[in-house]
Image 1 (tube, rainbow, N blue to C red):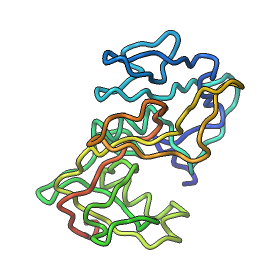
Image 2: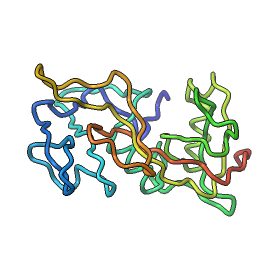
Image 3: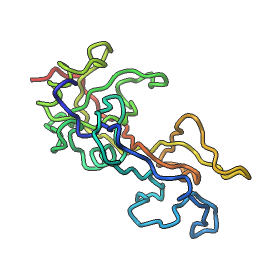
Length: 203
């Protein structure tokens, strides 16, 4: 969005951690899982998923509007903050404010029970997004009020240790909180399931 830098947007200077920092350890039940050599409590969420580490390299950066910074995306989804300004998202008697669109694999009940990794918005930033975002201008979308945006799970690549080193899946895999964590996953996105949905117009 020209002139607007979304809070969750990634930048060209963002760099992921090194594969050399990854190791295999054992959880309290003796099961192998992906870990960091110098792992800290903050590296895992409360359900035991290991999250990717991202640091910013020195130098001038360019905003990547089509990618999200894992830490800021997680923060906005966990704390229900606006994805554009980072302030508390809007909520009224109908629920939290979201923008959603149909994707491959969307449920037949869409937008009810839709899974989204896009955090909520405040009213001002929702207006800006609808006006300035090229993707939304070219995509059939809906503005929603959601009574219960329930935490659903995480996604990320799955890592396997081979005799030639680490191998990861080319596409991210989704791991629902209703199932045990995937031991080889390096999570990079948090998802909510939109329940109690009402399609609305912005005031």
